[in-house]
Image (cartoon, rainbow, N blue to C red; front, side, top):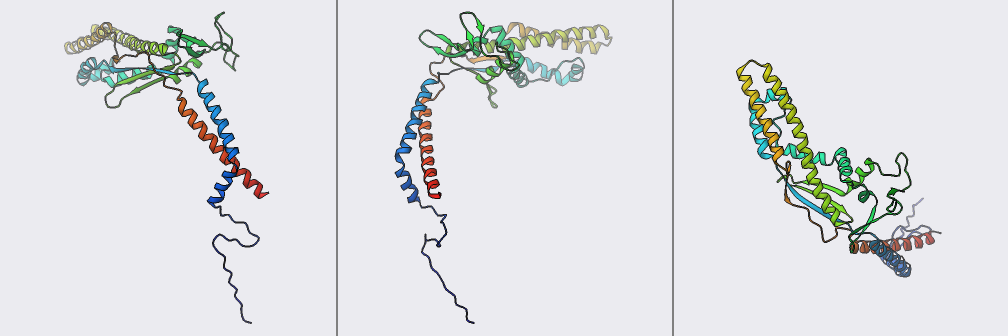
Length: 320
């Protein structure tokens, strides 16, 4: 029996009878979009209106920043010299003479971002209300706008709804979280210069808080070094009384001298850890929200959703 072979030829774009093509022509898509242009325009218009309303509703945020430089290089160079000679004895005495200015600067930056320091800063400066209860700023009167749902200004009481394990008045943990969001601390890896910035509704408060932060971290690191130096001197003085070796006494005297220098540096320097290169100023321009960008992105997003809805609608109807 001879075999009969039948060849069928289909032109490009044709499909077998009874089969659906997975091929989508770009012209078909453009035609569908053109047919649904009013739906796309309506959705785009709604998104545009919403984005404009959102951009106008969001309050202005201002950023103030200060540029600082490490201020303790001279003091630490003398410590580094002693560390090479008497590092073992210094370690025995509980004194770290090998710390560099970078180490102290890094320590100060980490202290500044720590929960304990921020909590003490908020309590000492009494900034809990402008931190947690503000929703805007009146520029004409230079007055903060408080959220009536959180704080009653007339009675001076917090009236917000209590959260699980958190009372009406914000806790220090809550305040720390909010403050960490508006605080930015950066250190240049090449120059070691430090930039501290605060963002707030009020440009005056942003500038004031940055200035207070610089002052507070200098005072805190000064206090810590004073306590450490005084304890070290006390310890070394006790060892000096106990020892009978003249060479050891000479070493202890030098160590006491260096700790005395630490106390002297701390007492005469207001800018103990950081020297201000460029102080914080009251910003004139906002940093956010970027209203034109919000409007453009909102409009483009609306156009995208409009196209997607038109295509889905057409293909769903086609499938049905």
